[in-house]
Image (cartoon, rainbow, N blue to C red):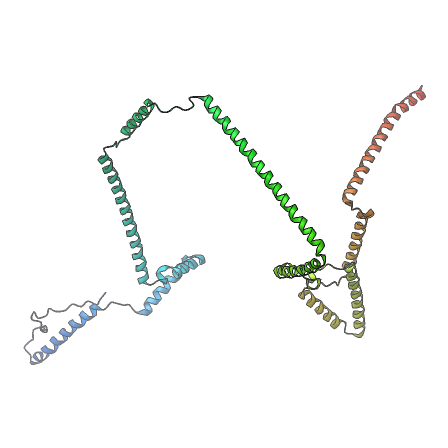
Length: 391
């Protein structure tokens, strides 16, 4: 909006507009050029102001915006406000400048245009192919419709039926003779192959025997020289084997890590005994420190040492009850293994236990049945005795 002002009509020749008519006074004659200049410059200023946009005061605009925001906050909940802020913050219109949006729109239009061009080209290509096929068929003079093609096919079939081609299996006896001849030829070929194999095998055996006889004679003559040569050959072979297969040589026991080493006999029992001894010594140390008045310091030091051991991965045995329980379990395992290997033969104790339980259950059932039978036999005898007593 611009500021509009009503101006008096200007002079058509472009000069300054004339003012109101004078009353004939000398003062009015002197003020006429000043009035005309003021009107002229007022007109120019109004034109300049009309070009400038109208802007209300900034304070009023800010107050109006604050009022609108307050009204919206009262109407909307907190969740709606948060969503509106997110939408404003992450909208493409806010994040991207106008040039990028225009580029995106132009790119979409270009893609659509290219798709339309491709579709048009494909359709044109299909039409051209159809036209070419039709032209080729017309040039050949062949059928173009389905009915004509069917007629042509049926005519071809009938012509083939009328033709007398070479018949197969005219003489079935001749075909059977040919099959028999083929079978006989195959059998003869198999027999010849077997003979050749046997002959080659016999020749190989004869050659081996001939080679072994002179070698045995030479070995008797040069026994001393062959022994020295054999030792040298064995040494060279061993050296070559070590060089070729060094990756497969097993390391010594010292190089094996502790985790893979097998403990000595009774190693676990000794470790548990040592742990019990250390626990008793710790109790004695704590008792002596408490008597001196520094029991808490000693207890804290030992707790810190145990924590460091646990962090480093060592196993700390500081509970006497658990250590004793582990000893009992170890003794029980030893007793079970001793029973299982009694007599030098392994026995599955669980299976034996099940068998014993089954046998005991069978015996109990058998005894119960026998008792029931005895009771049934005694019951009629008791009835007879009671009847006699009553009589």
